[in-house]
Image (cartoon, rainbow, N blue to C red; front, top):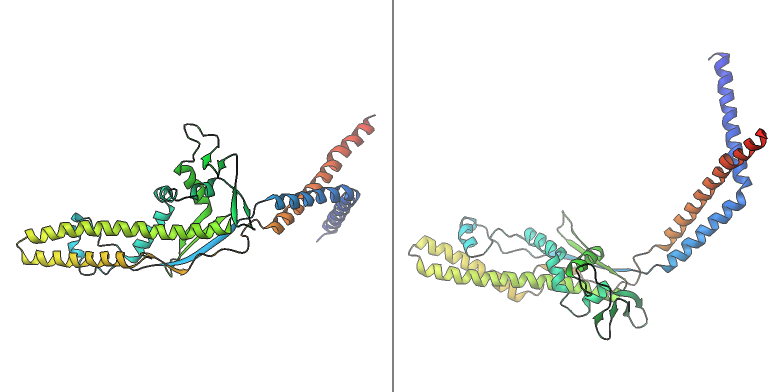
Length: 318
């Protein structure tokens, strides 16, 4: 390295020291404003976090019941399809079908038929821990007369539509399936821990019931069709095939009648949560304080490099 390079390196190092020292002096001179602004943001974040409503999450772990074995009957799937029966259904496909049912608009429309579900989703304002009851927004819904008071949307009515409810429902409900174990995890988040638990119970019960009724209806229709076909056909092999399908449908019908938890079996049932799931007030306060500190430093630097230098330039020009 030549002497010139060494001199340039020393100069650069000195410049860096001077710049850092200058920056420190600027911030030290503006320490009062930095402290005040940071404190205001910290106080504001505390006030804001305390104003937020607590939400509680009830969860449940489920397993999907295995479907009836249909091995050896796949060659008769065409005949089964004519009877309205799907022999390819497995435990996994039933679980996937159940998950999609729970997420569907059709299912939300069904849930709306139960008492207090609609206002609890769309008009809940706060939760009274002492009475464990929901307090509704009187501007939206009157619980005494059970009348909706909200302003209707364009081409809508005062009563929320199932499409509006589905949008809110999708935000408060989460469901997923573990690809390895096949277990299904579902949770509901709401301002009322009691409603979160009861609503999750309702979702599991009604999804089981709807699929149970669907399979019952299909099996009854299939049995009627196959019984009539068995009487009509003169071929022995065809009779044996039809009888095998009838046996499968009888098993499906029996399982639908016996099991209340038709597809979804509760491994860990829904519970009333004791601790809130959100908001996390400590993080809100920390982030608010950090944001205030950063903004106060930026404002101090802007004030020094733009406004102070402009004033100095004006003085020099005079």
